[in-house]
Length: 78
Ligand SMILES: [Zn+2]
Ligand SMILES: [Zn+2]
Image 1 (tube, rainbow, N blue to C red):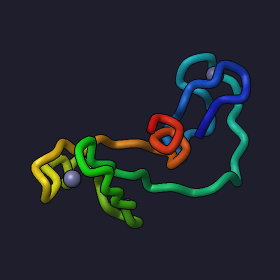
Image 2 (image 1 turned 60 degrees about the vertical axis):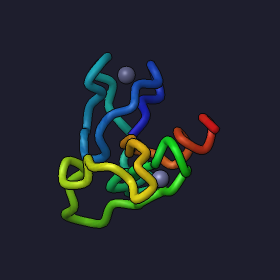
Image 3 (image 1 turned 90 degrees about the horizontal axis):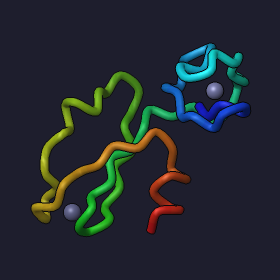
């Protein structure tokens, strides 16, 4: 989750910002993160209990998968 004070992205279940220690607002959209292919743009949403490290593999197209916590991050990046 994003810190309101400094804008740092923190892992979803953190209570305090890893950067400035500001208390984080809970109750935002829960996410397990997303893996997005840098080549074909394919997006895989991780499910509860899935670990991004299990998926740090290549996409079917041969492109590299990049992990994002929030959908907005890669949507804005395109
Ligand atoms: Zn912060
Ligand atoms: Zn791909």
